Length: 548
Image (tube, rainbow, N blue to C red):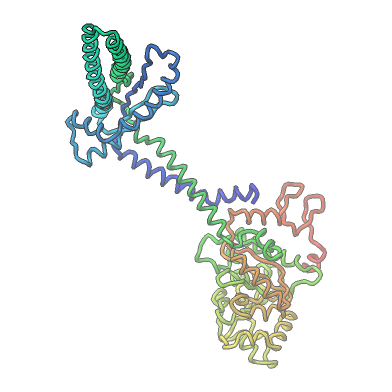
């Protein structure tokens, strides 16, 4: 897919992208406008792991320990006990639902590579969330100190008892040593006294460590930036939400458009026709603006309309398709029903008659004939009557004149039970030859090629078969199958007509560019004309002979 195709695809689905983007943006705007404003209050805490006086060389490890504590405290700050105590202090409800909502509104985040952590509280009441943000650290610090002190207090009491006991033992040994008279006894008391003093020294050192830990437990979490009452809500961000929703809606629409195009296997351009069938596109007929005018004879009623000019281009290209052996008998068919073959047959017959040629249009769709309705002529007798009349019938009696000069119609006549057998009979072959002698061009409107075999049966009896494809409606596989079925019977498929083509589509402009050119004077001309070097179009030799 080249850039032109992407541009065409963008233009084709621009309406969907705009609708989805506007719908998403509108929905996001309404939701944002109707949503209550949400505020956020934040407080910053410092986690400090104090170093002992005799461990100055371990300051870096203390900092790392503080960072680890910050991450640990970040998880503990929003735990249920802290939240519940905060709610109790602020006289808030402590039911399960309220506590769950309050806990969900709190977020604690350690600030990377620092000893800081930030506590954020969100809510619709700015004064209340600021109060919660400031109370929450107070509760946590108190609970943390209580926990640390409780753990240290037990050790401290135990050490104090042991120290007192050792001191009593020392006093007892000293008293015994003072009253001892025997040197051996005195030596034994001095050894025991030395052991008790060593034990006392160890207990005193441990006691000092406990007191230091007790001091550290009182100041390792500090509020460095208390929360203030917020004045600007953080949500909803109406402009941002609207813009993001529009972008998401547009992206969804673009994805849907690409998916539809990927799954769409219909014929849309002359490139598709050539790629699938190897045939040329002889005509590109734009979709009629009035849906009820699908069978309108636009080449006669609106002779200057672009669609009428498209049929005239089709006429010329058909003449070009076989210069050595001009097309005298032509069958028009399609791969499936409702693709516009009857409308194409009628308008093609009109533009050919407008050149002065005698044209006979034969309705050989013996299952669903419509040409008598298109031209407003009776259908009492027609091609089936001529087939049943045998060699005694005079074909001139079945030619019905129309309001268009040089154009005659042979309707279907009564619908037979065996259309395929009639169209494949020797009598039909003779009728085709007789009509070719009586007229300059004979056009047969035949049933769809994939529905019945009538088109294939008749296709081998005429000079050429023109296949009509509904742009955007005919599937690639159906068109390829129809061409294959016709060619298997020996039919000469001269090309394809893209019908109901969107005049804004890439296929239409491609066809228009390919079959038209700008001469030296800047005038737009069909490629069926050649310039004589002075800007004047001249007819080809076979066209001059035909005009004569």
